[in-house]
Length: 424
Image (tube, rainbow, N blue to C red):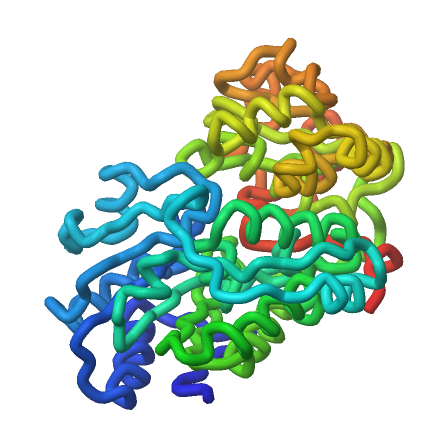
């Protein structure tokens, strides 16, 4: 059921609009005694989930006993990040999810079903895993808050992905990522219907229907001045509100191009992007737009390492971004990748499959490290001088020497594709 819906490609919702929309929905639920809020982490700072979490906390006050950022495999939030994203909420309410130990398996999606929906790409069973706190906390309201936007693993982000991946366990996260990668990222991105989402929806319908989960979903876009604005707010307890948000997100976040791009410059905000695990959104989100033999340059002043934890970082350093055929072959031959299918999926996502070059300009990683994982390297200071983010506008730019480049200031809020490479 949808409890609130408001959105259009030209709408601009203020913080007060978000508050009023959320409160309109919450009033329909009646009184609640024990509530957990599940927002995204700091990597989704621009989702407006921080504002909505604050509004929910002020609405329910002491009925909110726990706040669990949906970290997935990301770093735990720092006190400074919590304060910036959720100002005014007591820090002692925040719990940090442990994807290696802090989860419960609530059901198993059979290997036969996974094989069927993936077109025989994989045939393993998928464990539906969620935070033990969410599963057994005795809550009478679980408010899952997030942003719907094109996504490399689930086609479109958020909804039940926030629960099964954001608060999931290692095996469930890894296998869901590998399912999407093996099926093919170009066949998934920007699509609300795909094998990964089918598995998540199957799990929701059969394993978590008894839990009082309400989804609060935003859609974020840019106005004519390039400023981020909220285009939609959708609140509901089933897939209907997600489908509504996904439909709007395609209109707002998906840039369809008539010609492939020869050179793309992507800037990664150092406050959000400290690893290639996240920073490779610059690749995921542009891969369908870049021309054969084109070039992607990633300005990454905050880049400090590859993985979000030491185990993933070591695997990326060991195997590198070498394309789908080689990664699948390495998975077949190496137990460490078999036990970390999420890392294998990430290695697939982070490759151009040899079609175009990828040059990273990192703030804190050496040339040797960058080149060891199969990227090209360029000095950050040199490239920032040549391609100054303060002087570039999102989209096509003509440089002083006549060079044409396509600039993206935040790859996390969009998807770009060449029309002939994207097929429904």
